[in-house]
Image (tube, rainbow, N blue to C red; front, side, top):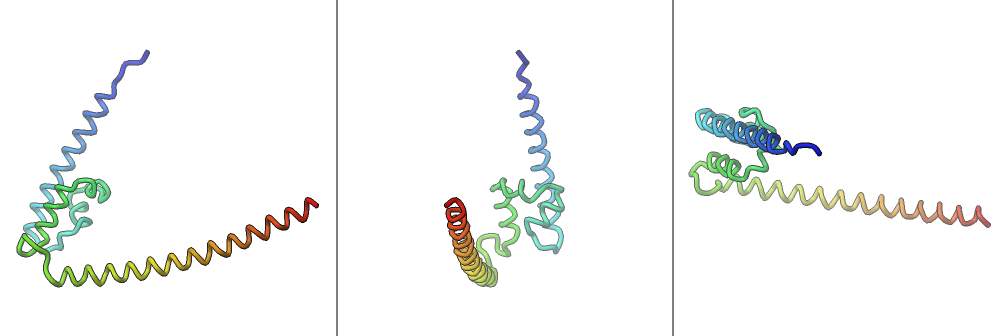
Length: 124
C-alpha cells in the first residue's frame, strides 16, 4: 500500500495561495500610488496572478472595489449609469443570441425529422 503524501500537495498549494495573496496585497498598494484604473485585469497583471484565481478571492475583490470608489463608500453616479447601460446592451445581445439559437434549433429539428423519415422510407 502506498503512503498518503497528499499533505505535501496541500501544503504546497497553501503556500502558493498565500504567496499569491501577498503579491495581490502588494499590487493593491502599488495601484493606490498610481493613476492607473483599479481593475481586476490590472490588479492581476500587476500581481502576476490569474484573473480567474482573483475572482475566487472575494475579500481581495472587495479591497479592490473599495480602492476604485472615490469616496470609499459608494459607487459614483456615472459608474451606476454606465453599468445600467452596459447591462441593457448585454441583455439585448443575449435576447438576440437566444432568438438565433432558437431558429437554429428549429432548423436542426426539422432536418433531423426529415432524416428519420428518410431512414424509415429506406427500410421499407
